[in-house]
Image 1: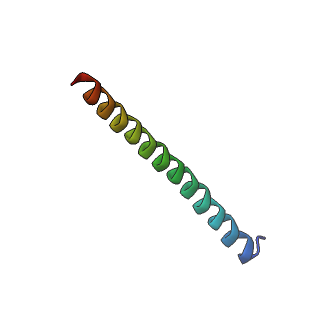
Image 2 (image 1 turned 90 degrees about the horizontal axis):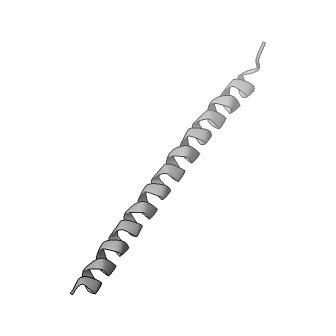
Length: 48
């Protein structure tokens, strides 16, 4: 028998874990886009 508090807590933990994963995925994606933008700008400036 699981008390209601435990099931609610495990659900909260699962949501938090998935949010952490999506947060890191978003941060990595934004960092990658910044790297590409900086690379494009530098190559453009050096090309001219």
